[in-house]
Length: 587
DNA sequence: CTGACTTGCGCC
DNA sequence: AAAGGGCGCAAGTCAG
Image (cartoon, rainbow, N blue to C red; front, side, top):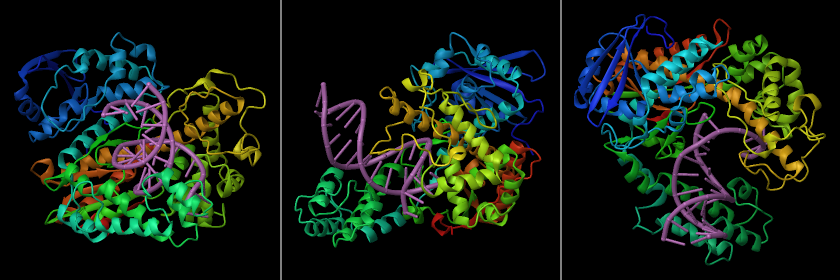
């Protein structure tokens, strides 16, 4: 079984574009100095790659999004790569990489390199800034930085997992998420009525609109305009200062139910209506672009069609092909488990032995109820200081001093303007804004949540407030203190969310390998393959007769990811797994 | 008219 | 059900 961070020698082949139609392949045995250079027409690349894949090899290239889609389109799947763009991004931010070893005239070019997201799998876009960069030289710099790193093994694992994630991302776009347009159309018709002419409201929305306008005596009201809606509600005597659904639900007024229904259906129409289907679903597949490392914490981002939020409402349209099934798996309470593992807290790991970590905390005597455990842990990881989660902190701190101490220290470090890092060494971005340039003033230091109990400074009016963390933060002393605390909440969450993302990457990378070896012969989309990934959840599309075997591999990959990150520390990552014909049939 | 910002809401 | 962290997207709003 090929492990993610395997150390066995694997030959590396650096691929370089030479002009518009030639590829240079520079091959070097992992344990030898010799380099063999081959030049071939770009059109011959898929055949070359397929041939060299017959024995273990790691392809080194500037950026997976610039190479792999065309290979996949030609039916060629690879086992391993070294994605220089993603690895560069990790190393440049890592506190465990000597930046001097990465420095070069071309470093700004690598810093600025963006993935390509065109649906067009044509090789070699014209005038690509990547073509001014030297992959072999960058590869050498990255290897030197790794070799000199005090956290070499962890960084190597991170880079391997990140690169494998890049392969998964391209493969998921290539395969697409099975999507039944007929089912989706039926769903829209049932909820909204027949498809209207362009620019017209669907019948159900039109009827709800007249109801709302009548109820609030506002004939011209457009509920899609927050300002206009707010004025209409206030004119009707309702005490509101925003128009969020949750706010409206609290109100007693005969027009509210129709308004809430309007908002819900309007959202469906805008986000996943007929035009969404026209744009994003073709050939029975929803294809969006996944961007590994697209979020600073290491989570993935996605482009196109809102793949990060496929609403429960439309999941009935996600249906496996005839004779195929979905294996849907997600990790229960990933982030608190990761926190237990990072801090090596035996007591919390004991709770995490339970399939429900929060219930385990109750059994361990830390808190009285599951709800308290959940709200308390979320507050610890997100920085909640007020309300119920704030009140839980002293109890959690007493019971789990090292775990709470870890996130508290991450918050304090962020408030001091320092960089924090994940378990495998991904660094947080340096703080931005004027607040970070100034020393912490007297009386400006934010109160500790766990140490002092309820914070006493700067709470004040709170107002509409919450200007973005990234804004410049110049201004009053209170403004700077607020920014400082907001950045502390970010770094607090960074260490947990980022390490959770690393666990998920290792899970995904391992699962990718396992699925390939399950399927026997055939191309990627003829074997069990990943079609969706979201933070802590995967969908595998598999021939029905292999579904049970896929379930086993999904579980084994999760256990392996836990060992890769936390070694022998006894922390469990139990999965909720379902074998279904439609995503809607989960739970 | 375009582009930047705000609001609200879907997902984890 | 919110609070606290991370996103993407669509529509409305407003300045240039």
